[in-house]
Length: 218
Image (cartoon, rainbow, N blue to C red):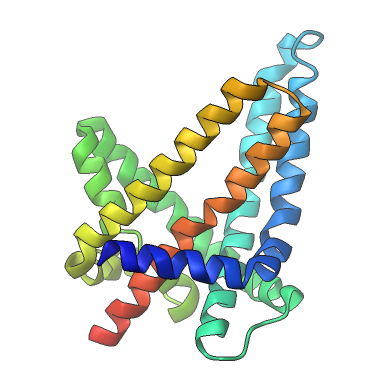
């Protein structure tokens, strides 16, 4: 069953590749170019690196809810049979930016707390809270409500979610390792890493597919 949902996620990804790329790649490209320019300063400005990494991290944290929310709105619009134009999806993503940012931060803190205890509790918490972003964006609920609802709503789909997330994550991680080993740190590796970052949208698509099933069953 998990393989079938993974196949559906891959089919959605391929069918809407251009639209998804238009939503996410501009933001991912900005981050990739900044990271590449920062690595070029390593030998000359070592003392500036900590502040540079903090800046990149904060920018990534600020941009992620925007294109993530836009992606979720776009997926829902496809499900409704009326796909959103790129700019409209991004505009809607902006409207949910604050709620989604707080949800993302609280989710991350909960997972981190689980990881500190042991790896398994962290993974368990991460999977059970994985519907929170969709609930926050599409149902317009606050961060704490979204997390609480996700905890209950994802229970029935826990094992499918876990298997699917692990498959996608491990596949992308191994591909990233192969790229780094093959080409090292260069402009080509940055470009290929950008592709890998974009392909991680499969995790979002897979989770959304299971979220819609949980909605149908509620």
